[in-house]
Image (cartoon, rainbow, N blue to C red; front, side, top):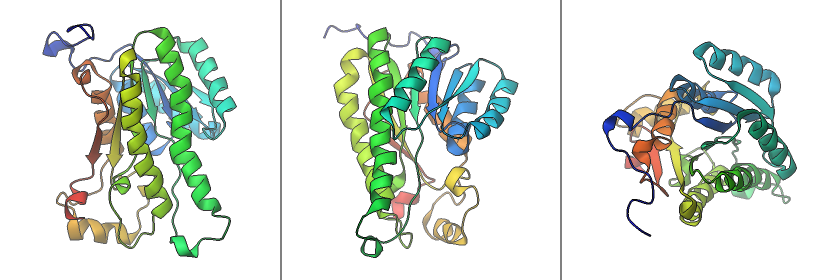
Length: 268
C-alpha cells in the first residue's frame, strides 16, 4: 500500500473533530450506552439508538435532543439478524451513511459453572447476546460502511472481565463472552482495515451506570482492596474514550482493547 493512501490529521485543530458524523449505538437508551450517546451528541454527532425498550429510548432521546443534533431510536434485537437488518435499513434511510458504530448492547449473568442446569441456557443466552450479537451487528453495519466506501470506526464495549477473574463474583459466562468479544475486535480489525474501517474495544471495570448503577457492597470492598483509583468509573468517561477512538486523532489505531477500570486489573 502506498504511503498516504489512508487519511491522517494535518494539525491538532482537527484531531478530535467528529462534528456532523452519524453514529449507531446499540443499547444507547440507558446505562453506559446513554453515556456514550450523550458524549457523542455533545461533540456534534447525530445518534441512532438501536434497542428493544422503545419507551426507555424516548427518555434517552429527550436528553439527546436537549443537547442538539439529529437523534432517533430504532427497535432492534441483536439476537435476531432480520431485526438488525431492518433497523439498519431504517436508520440509513433517515441518516444516510454511518461513520461510527458502537456495539454496547449486552446482558449480565452470574453463577458458577458446576451449578448450571444441564441445558446451559444461561451460558447460551450470554454468548448469543454479548458475543454473537456483537458479531451480527458488525456484520450488517460493517457491510454498509464497506459499500459507502468512506471508512468508519467500530467501537466494541467489552469488559475487564474478559481478561481477569473477578474473585467471588462467578462471572464465567459473561467473562467468556467478553474475552471472545476482545478477540472478535482484533480479528475483525485485521479483516476490514483494507476498507479503512477501524475496530477497537473499550473494556470498562466497575462503572456507575447500567449494571453498576446500584452497586452491591462487595463492589466497594473490591475497589477499596485493590483498585489504585478507588471509585466507580462514570459513563461519560467511557463516552470520552469512544469519542477519541472515533476521531481523526485515532486514525492509526485499530485492533486495540483499551481497559478503563481505575487500575483494578493491576492487582489481579
